[in-house]
Image 1 (cartoon, rainbow, N blue to C red):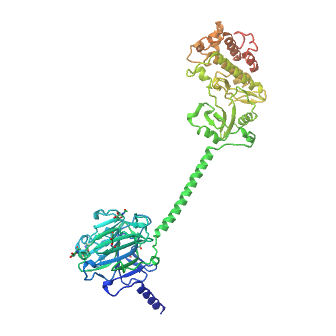
Image 2 (image 1 turned 90 degrees about the vertical axis):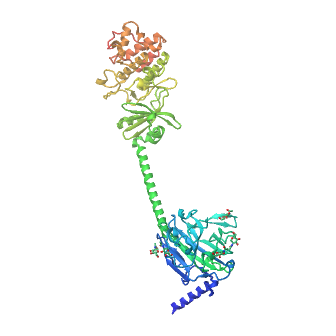
Image 3 (image 1 turned 180 degrees about the vertical axis):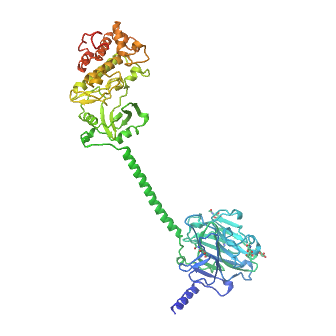
Length: 631
Ligand SMILES: *[C@@H]1O[C@H](CO)[C@@H](O)[C@H](O)[C@H]1NC(C)=O
Ligand SMILES: *[C@@H]1O[C@H](CO)[C@@H](O)[C@H](O)[C@H]1NC(C)=O
Ligand SMILES: *[C@@H]1O[C@H](CO)[C@@H](O)[C@H](O)[C@H]1NC(C)=O
Ligand SMILES: *[C@@H]1O[C@H](CO)[C@@H](O)[C@H](O)[C@H]1NC(C)=O
Ligand SMILES: *[C@@H]1O[C@H](CO)[C@@H](O)[C@H](O)[C@H]1NC(C)=O
């Protein structure tokens, strides 16, 4: 009972909404949504009414489909003269592509002598024609197409246009979808496949067919998009036609809907569509999935980013890793972070490599506030030695104007990094033995010898501990920009509380005293090395030079030989070209011989050496016959 009452009520609404005059001449109706039922509608193909929301769905998103919806009674032109023939229609449609990809193929408003278009083709034929009926006057069909695919075979202008077709898909007139905005006084383009509802008005009067488009929120624009003269009686000689819609999908698909439709014989009698009563257009469910996909992708991207950042963090931690032990706490202020040294040397770039030796490598770098630095990397794991070195750094006890200032250190696994001031002039061996640097004058050489003697004397006696350099040699003597001499490499220095001997043998051939292997390093072995250095600086050649004639090969022997011949100054560097003070050269060479005596007892201490070299004391009387002098 309730059921039938309900039905009665529905049909009442139906008749109120759908004012359908019994006279065929005055066919006139309005659908504000289609949930009143499908009475009076002829549907085929994929066309169906979605009762729950009142949409007339012409196609869903299945490929190669078509759907038709016709008002099931024909529109009769009547027998009046063609002058007075007119009709007017207004509909709202929506073309919803599948998740933002291109869709197809479009919707057409159709006037057709037959409601049966089931023999037509989908896709570009829009469910209107097949290959044999397209272009045939016997089709008796007029279509106003909203076409969303560009078909070259029908000369389509683009994939978003409106066209008028007379018995053919080849449009007699077409234009890109747009509407005239009265407010702005210009055409505004409209995307048919936006999924948003679009209003279409088709007015026919005085043989002129006008097509007007607008978005749902707009009033009917004052200017039509298309205005074309059409002879309807020529297409429909029977003066009768069915009116309705056709839509199709091809390989491109979209959901195509009609939301509301009004039709009347004239503009005056056309009833307005109540926009507020129109159903809403469902967005494809695919989109929800794509939102989910986006969320998933974002999460994935975040995970990847986190992994990359984490990896980068671990990588940084690994490359910047340091070794710190509790006892180092007190040397904090002398400690440099590995990161800062890494950056100062541009990641220990090979371009900044200053030197390479058995113990490690030296790089040039620049630290903010400090300036140019030299970073020495020692591959050494002797914790004990490092601790002592750090001690020196802390106490700052090794502060002498002729010691390369040690600025600090850093420790890593198996590496000790020493940071010292960068010496502009490089090491003295480049001036003495290489021809690429200008030769030093005699006074410069003597000044450097005094500098180094003073530094060495300080290490042996001035500091709170005895420091044995053990590796005094030309390549460890650095020059600053003023050619002042600095003792550079204290990397192998051994610290000991005044006295004691050391068993490990470290040094450089030519600078190593003979007793070093048997009794170990002492201040006297340092003096020996300094003596060798004196001879090298004065004579401008290495201790041992295999390219020299036999009698000159060993520097000490050669100097002795010159002395024996009564002309000690013959041993001097020829590049000085005689510009020197013979008495000074004589004293210096003899001092060199004294220091390189094979008898450690004959070698003077560094304190005395400083006295001699500064001429505060005269050299002791000795000759080539003094035991230990000539080896
Ligand atoms: C589309 O409509 C056709 C015919 O009504 C139906 O067979 C098909 O399952 C529908 N496809 C979808 C995706 O709804
Ligand atoms: C085209 O459609 C007409 C009817 O509309 C039908 O008679 C004819 O067989 C169809 N031709 C093809 C090739 O499908
Ligand atoms: C069609 O548009 C033209 C202007 O382009 C207008 O003069 C004419 O009245 C319109 N006809 C109808 C039926 O709307
Ligand atoms: C607007 O579009 C119509 C139809 O395509 C065209 O005739 C007209 O010139 C255009 N007007 C402007 C201002 O672009
Ligand atoms: C329209 O076509 C009919 C039939 O072909 C013809 O009799 C009539 O003269 C045409 N009208 C105009 C205005 O061209």
